[in-house]
Length: 309
Image 1 (tube, rainbow, N blue to C red):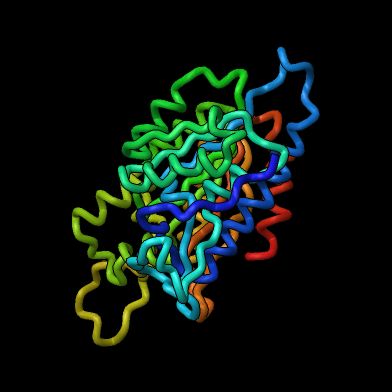
Image 2: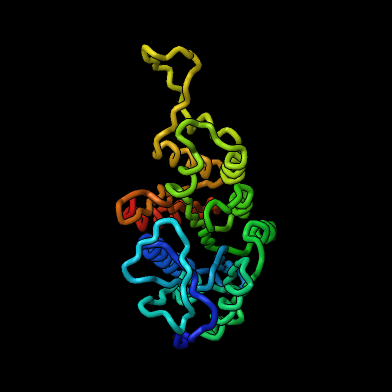
C-alpha cells in the first residue's frame, strides 16, 4: 500500500548539517532495502524472525534543508513546515525506514523531545498501514536502548540507526547492542567535530572532557593510544621529560574501530563523511552482532560504504 501524501505537520522539522547528511541517509536507505530483502524468504511464519527497525535520537522523521547552506557543525533553527521557503523538506531516517520495501515487522523510534515525539506520531497518519507496528518512546536514548536490549532477542532481528547529538552515546549502550547477538548497528561517530576537538594538541585535557571520552570509549586507556611519546629533543630543550604528541586522525579512527571489534563479531571498514572543504566530520560505522549473519551483513555494508571512504 502506498504511503499517504505527506501532511503539513505542525512543529519544526529536524535540523540537519550539509550534503553529508544526504550521504549518510542514502547509505542507510540502501542497507535497509538489502536487509529486508535478504530476510524476505524466511522459513514458515511460526519459525521466522520478527524483524525490526530501531531509530534512537529519531528527531521528527523529517529533515529540512536550507538551499546553499553546508552547515558542518551546528544545528540550525528552522521555521514551521508551512513556511519552509526557500527550504525543502527531505526524508529523515524514520520516514526512510517506514517506506522501505519489503517492510519491517516493528518500528521503534526513541526521542527525548516531547515535541519531536508528537511529530513522529503524525507518521502513523502518513503510513496508516504500518501504524500498528510503530512504537514511539520518549526518553533518554541510552537508557531506553539498554532496557530494550536486555530483552530476549532469540526470535528477533533488527537494524539500529544511532545518529546522536554529539558524543551522547555511551559505550555501555554499544555493549548492550552487541550482547543481543541480533542487531545490526549503524553508528555515526563525531570524528572531526567531536573526538578531535576534545583531544587537545598538548594532551592537557580538562577533567570533564576526559570523563566524556571515558564514557564514549568505555575505557580510560585511550590516552596512551592517542598521545604518543616524542623523545626527540632540540638543543634548547632543558626539560628532559618526554613530550606527548597527538596521534594522527587515522590512528584515532583505527583505535575506535578496534574498540568496536572487541564487542562485535564483524565490523565493516567505516565510511567518512566530509564537509564541502573535504574535512572529515564523522565516521559512519557498521557492526553486526549476530555471528551467523555477520559475514553477509558486513559484505553488504562494505559494498555500500566503499563509495565514501
